[in-house]
Amino acid sequence: MKKFVETDRPPTSSSAYRTFAPLNTPWRRRRETLAILVWWVIPWFCLYLTIHFLRSDRWYLTGGILLYIAWMIVFRTHPKEGGHRQQWFRRLACWKWFTDYFPIRLHKTCDLPPDRSYIFGYHPHGILSLGGFGNFATEATGFENLFPGINLRFLVLNSNFQIPFYDLFLTMMGVCDASKESCNYILKQGKGNSIMLVLGGAKEALDAHPSSNYILTLKNRKGFVKIALANGASLVPVFSFGENDLYEQVANPRGSKLRTLQTILQKKMGYSLPLFNGRGIFQYKVGLLPNRHPIDAYVGEPIELPKLAPEQITPHVVDGYHKKYMDALTRLFDTHKAKHGNENRLIVYADDTNV
Image (cartoon, rainbow, N blue to C red; front, top):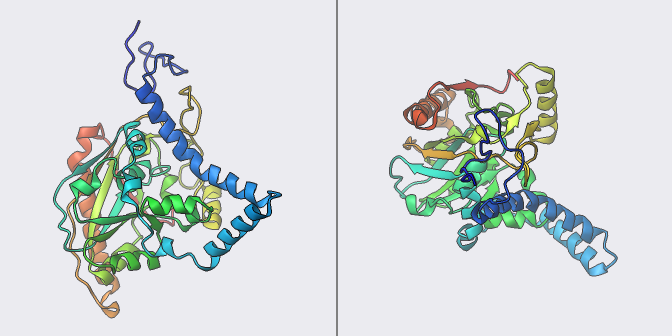
């Protein structure tokens, strides 16, 4: 019997790949796939529970979910006020299974003193920022050990907090709203309190194509620099090799009809709709699960920024630090790209207008 090869699509010949997972797949790999599947299903299960309770003929279930929704609308503040991060939840064994699926790895390039706050910028967005979630919303890759004293919050779109029950899951992971209000609240809590922003946002997901140059929507995104200057926070670039290689995406070059439609929908809904394909649970050809591909995230050196008064944060000052950040990100990419087969790939900085 052939030995099982540790890849997503084990080769049966030099030119063909298996379609279905072999029956002798090790239990370790099955539980890793299960962890990814559960992660995918959680928001949909929470949505199902909400609808089920709303339609229930038991008054206490319907009344309970209506009260919950009313609380979310009127009183809930934790997505914008640092959340309720639970370290025991972030350390659960299932998150290790989640990161081992790819695997996801976190690389430290220098120390980050806990005597200040940081704004980490995660690049690229990819389809779903799975490397960002695995490295910075869980402790499976050892963030708390690599960077002791850094109290990090992973920030996402506010729309993720609109599903009852799912918002509680996110807040226990230390995930918060990516609004300006949320950023300022966390950074003002004192030394070590830091945030992780996926700076390319939803638009950058539309440029996540495997084996191509990294198109980063960063050229005219400078709000994070203004927030850093207002709070005296240092900027830390993070580049994640492999994030764009988890899914195949339908060709949608900028200016195409498909891209124009996707951009219109993104503006109306707040998040993008890339047309992508991964793998299934028991086969490797079609599905929503990501392909097994290593994700290696490198945390770069911090760029120290002064704390300035609002009138001192001029466009000239912002542009200067924004350029320093992009230069530091490019250096980080160029330093490590050869280790991950990216010798011929480049970073291309794009803006939001040419879509």
